[in-house]
Every structure is written in C-alpha cells, then in structure tokens.
Image (cartoon, rainbow, N blue to C red; front, side, top):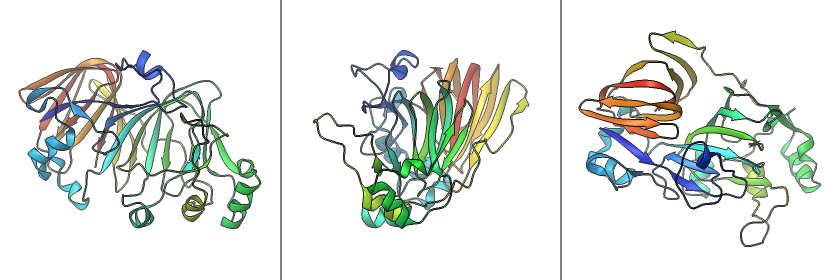
Length: 319
C-alpha cells in the first residue's frame, strides 16, 4: 500500500518561508517553521491524498490496515514509533532538551525524544548548539542558567550540507538561524526550553521555560558522536545511497536517484520516503504516484518491491 501524505504545518515564530517558496507547501500561513511529513501525533496528523484512504488520517488508515502494516520491528512500540519533519529555521530556535523514555512517560505521559538532524541546506556561517564543550555538573548548569552564562560553555558547531547530528535524549541542543534540515525523531512532542533569547509569543508574553525539568534530564557532557553520517556514499546502478544513522529506534539513509532506484518494503518495517529535491515517480505493485520536492510517502510493511524513477533526492526511514 502506497500512501501519499499531506504535511501538517506549524508557524512557530522562528520559521521562514522556504517550505512555502522552495518546497511548494500550500498554506495561508505567513511563515512555515515545520512541516510534519510523517506523523500520527495528536498535535499534527497527516492526511492521505491518494487512493482508497483519501482524506483519512494516517492513524485511521493504519487502524483499518492493522498493526501488521507497520512491520514486525514496530511490535515493540505501543504507538506509532516515529515522527519526521522538515524544519526551516530562519531564526535561532530556543536552547532545549528532551527527556528519555523513563522520565517522559512518568512525567509527561508520552515517550521521550531521541532524534537526528540531516542538514539539507544552510547559510554560510550557520551554526547550532550540540551538547557542551566540556563536562560540567548539574549544579554548575543550574548556576549558569541563573546568571545567564551557560551559553559560554555550550558546544557551538558550524554546519554544512550533508552533516548528520544524532541528538540522544538528554542532549542540550538548538538549531541556529539559516538552517534547513530533515528531522527524524521518536513520536513525541515534549520539549524543555532552557533559554529563548527573551522572545515573546503571540500573546505578547515571554515563552515558557522549563528550567527545573531541563536540569533533571540534561546530560551535561560533550556529544559522543561526530557530525558525519555513519556510512560513506555508495555508487550503484542508477543511484547513490548513504547510511545516515542506524539505532534501535530508526534507520535512515539518503538516496540520490539519477535514473532508477529499486528496493523492498518487507515484513520487518514500513518505509518512509521524503523527497528533498527533484521530481519523479514511485511505483509499488499496481500503484504509481508522481512525486516532487517536499512530498512524503508511506509504504506499508507488506508493500513488497517498489521503484523510484526520475532525478531526485530522498531520505528513506525504517524502524
């Protein structure tokens, strides 16, 4: 089953216009900070725009299709396991942290949030915050939040297209202005803000900070991983692929199709295809859909062989 998804769009105050102007998202919103490209989360569900499930939410379709449509790897999760976004940060995001599963389930009633960022484009000199320069204690972290000096000890990283940041739960982080990225994350919307540059929300009030919870969950250490994808680019007939990251939550690779890419959605996992550039078609069995930059497809675990034709770039995700 091949489902084409309508993104759920968010107009957070730090967003820009690239998702409208470059990716062609149709909306009356002035800015589009995020497009939720694969989502069964209550805060922004996808609807389906093709086939027999046209107009239904992805959750509704999965309910009809059954849990087998998600694959055997998803059986360990009691809800849809991941959420995939496109993020256009025209301005800096807040400095924030996400809890792990144990803390989030106990305090927030949903899973924690480990995620990865794949940099699609960025302005020259753009940077983000990724952990700390050196290990510090929670007590020092608290003191530096109080006297507004904690930005002196965070790890600021210049970014370039193709970088991959693995943001394990508990890692302090912030996307900087001028960065466009794809985010693959656990299916959670729990975020603890530490610092927000004194900005106010639509109601004219300072946006809420979550200092005590952030101190509870932050791992005050440098990041353990580099910013390089885990795999090297491998040239194959008609396409190039590169493993970005693989963990117990998700496996993500980048695929650059020059002519044709063939793969299989087997019983182990559904497949998400996010088109980040170009145009083409995706075919599976008797189904075929045209795709372009900004389109998102969901293939059920029993879909079998699928083929991508055209000249396009994809982010492919499985659990």
